[in-house]
Length: 444
Image 1 (spheres, one colour):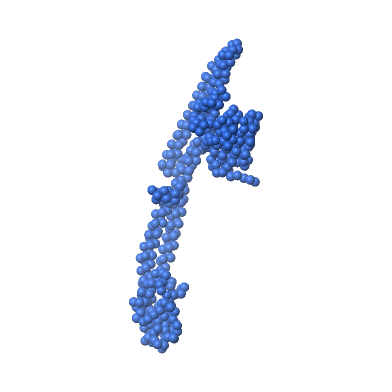
Image 2 (cartoon, rainbow, N blue to C red):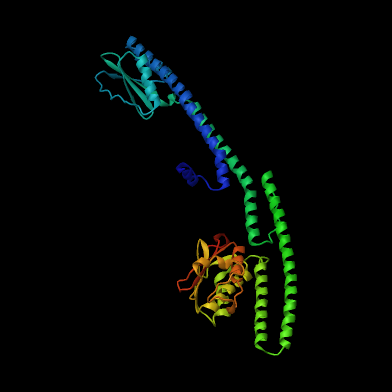
């Protein structure tokens, strides 16, 4: 369980990166195993052969120097044939201390080879470029033989490393290009689905990519066509329902106008007005402004316009708005949801505060000092025709569709709405719009 949670946090989250990891990891593992086998077997074998050959050559040079102590020039020529550098020092020369242990494999192998081939006492040291062997050959002289370290490294090592790195980079590049082309249709499908959810006038998606992705694109197009057809049929039906409902209501209102004034007649007129308002609100709720296209809009001026034009005479409004925030919304839908919220504030409150800010998501908070909504009913009020008792009653003009309409409009723009307690003592309405619909703040 802990391992699973650890892997979930550390593994890439996107399909593109996970797919690329699935393709690249085997390449890395194969190259790592190949490198291990190469360096463990081939390179070790080469080093051992070189160490033995150089140790044998040193043994030959030492033997020659002992048999030909007065012909050291000849001995030097023979040492050069074995790629050894020979120097002769008096025996009283102070020898350097033996370099043990050696920090890498070649030094160990060379020392083992010298122990097997040299009978004389020797001292093995190293410099940055050479292994140096000091061998006293007589009471009068000591030989110093230098062996280049580069002879212990096979040229095939460089070729192998270059080949491994080159093929790994090439395969990774090919996998990256291939996976990017395969993931692009999926991203397009996700963007099309997201935009269709915000604006059902999105154009038909052109399927591309793998067979399964193309089938998903075709299914999306078919679903989009069915939804559009359903919306068009619903709009036509609602137009007919609106006409059929308002015609008898108009006749009833005409008959009431012809009747003498009385308490019952006034009551019926009030009921007819309420029914007419409910029909209008119902049509607004079902329509939901979904046919309006998304546009770039500066929110702060619109908020001030709606508040000042319709509600400032009845409400005391205070603003804390960031004028730099510009986002993609449906303009008329945004105005309507503001009107619906502020109309509730007008009926139930005296003071309203509006705050607009952007910290990742764009947040609009509308607070009032009204009676508020009990916490247990803050989800119920988003259900159509749900109405609270007490102060929020039909007598104040509510139809039970104001907040459902607001939620529908906010959702159509990809946002969320939450009811909270207000710092003014009443209700707080928090509307969040996703950050991918906004633009970075620009202070210039």
